[in-house]
Image 1 (cartoon, rainbow, N blue to C red):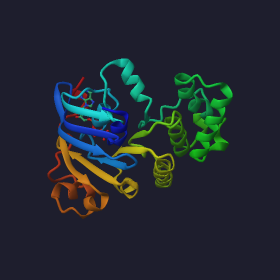
Image 2: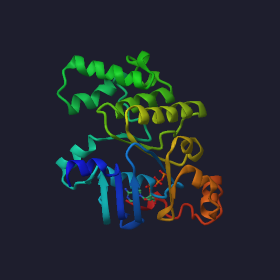
Image 3: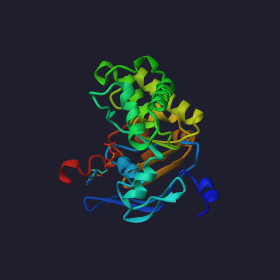
Image 4: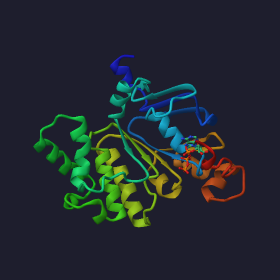
Length: 265
Ligand SMILES: Nc1ncnc2c1ncn2[C@@H]1O[C@H](COP(=O)(O)OP(=O)(O)OP(=O)(O)O)[C@@H](O)[C@H]1O
C-alpha cells in the first residue's frame, strides 16, 4: 500500500476477525472500521470481550481468523515492527499505571526518555505542555499518592499522549471515578481528540457518560458485534438486546457471567 493510501485508510479496520483466548472463541465475525478523527465507544457488558478487542489492536493478541489493520497497516507479528506500531497508539489502561516513586512530571517524561533521544530541556518542555493539556501544570512535582483519583487519571492521560500518538485507546477510563471527575475526563478525551486531531476508541460499560462525546458506538455481546452506528441510533433502537443493555437489566437476551475468568489460564 502507498503512503497516501495508508493515510486515507480508517484508523482501525477489522475484517472477518475471530479472537480466541484460552482455547475458547471470545469474539467472531468482527467487521469494524473506525474513521480517522472520530471517537468510537465500544460498549458491552462485563466479560463480553471489549478488552480482548483492544488486545487485538495493540497486537497483544493475534486474530485466529481475519485481518486487523491499524493506522493503515496490518498489525505486524514481528516484535520489532510491533513496537514501532505501538508508539503510534496511546493507551490509557484501567489502573493508571503511574509509578509511585516518580512525580507526575517524571511519569510523563518516562515514555519520552525511553523512546526518544530528545535533550533534557526539550523533554521538560514537552512534559510541561502535556501537563497543560490536561489542566494540571501545578501538579508537576506531586507524587501519585498526593493526587486525587481524577488528577491521577489526568496524569496518566498526559503520559499516554506524551509521544503524540495518532490513535488513543482507553480501557474503562472512568473506573473508580466519581461523577464530577468522570465528566472532567470525558471532556478532556473529547477536547484532546479534537485539538490534537486524534482518533479515539473508548472501551467502557459507562454508556451514559461516554455516548455524549462519541461519534460512533459499537456494542458487543454474546461473542459478536450486535450494534454499530451513531449514539442517536443506539438510543433510538428498540432491539430487546440493546434495550436490556442500555437499561442495565439483568434478564434478557444478553447472558451474563457465562464463563467465569477464574476458570481460564
Ligand atoms: N488471558 C486470558 N486467557 C483466557 N481467557 C481470557 C483472558 N482474558 C480474558 N479472557 C476471557 O475472555 C472473555 C472476555 O474478557 P474481556 O476482558 O475481553 O471482557 P471485557 O468486556 O473487557 O470485560 P470487563 O468489562 O469485565 O473488563 C472473558 O470470558 C474472560 O474470562
